[in-house]
Length: 428
Image 1 (tube, rainbow, N blue to C red):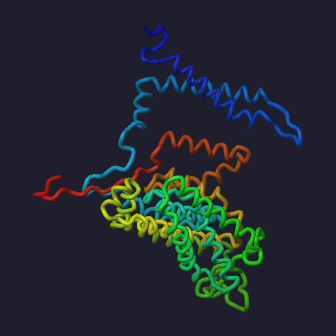
Image 2 (cartoon, rainbow, N blue to C red):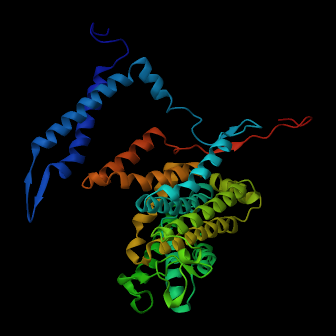
Image 3 (tube, helix red, strand yellow):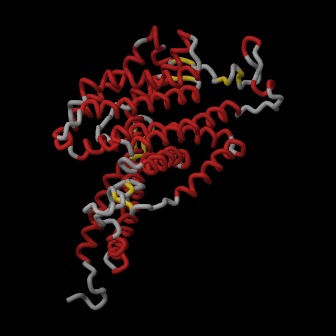
């Protein structure tokens, strides 16, 4: 029988066990970070701060365990234990609310550069670049099921393609925008054709090695890539008009040609505008591909490769198409990144970037386009909002990801497919 002061259905023993486990986790996490204060080559211990943090975590966990064992808490937990959290089929004829939201977002995107400061404009550009990267990797990982840990290599190929193309061949932004995509796609074919017969962890290790090889080549080939010193990237132009206050070689700046007052943000407004158009084009292409036979083949191979090969699908060519398309998207993102930065060096293309792009895909939802777009902005804007917590920013970032995996294990937005109405005279 339950004690007189305890509501029926509440397990105090389980609450205490949860509290003790939370305290131990808090000790492991906060002990080295908060309890040890470095001072030059020595350190001091702060056990009092750690003790207060552990007590706060344990008290919060105890109250949370009690709350989750109430009827309302059980209903709340039940929302995360549903069996339909994966891909689900909508009713035939379903019309999404996005048909109203997307035009509004396009209007806001068109007005944004004229009211935003340079800081927010650069954050938006960076967010859109990661949207492109997330969309490309979502094709490879989310649709085709290929775990690619060296995706940043194609990003670097696009960025260095613009920098080196200008330095050695005099190629500008507009030429390298499609050329960067082609170069990255060719690199994807060069890597993918011999290794896509591998599966799972073996493929992940090979792609990880490819990413590190590209970074080390860029870092050590001093005579060609500049090594750690990097390479400068030319400013973008439109019809030969530059966005600086004064044009080089006696040219005419953009603002003087159109009789406008000089705006130092013109370069970023131009990059933002072109980037929005490219993102919309990539979204449209991906949307169409997922509904074409090639998109269905990607998903079928992801779910059961043996069954699809038995039906006659060439698994290497189908996977290679996903690999090359994802790589080309990363190449385009690299061209925009180089133009935005005005400078590239190997430190921008480490394994951490690949991990961040993979986190965008996982948090957004495997195969979900809308989820990837939202996750790209969340993981780009969140570090900027947490700049005031410089010492604990990475810790808070990791806690956010852990909470998301508990709250939405299938990602921010579940993948959905439109149902097909059964025709008369055809059995369902």
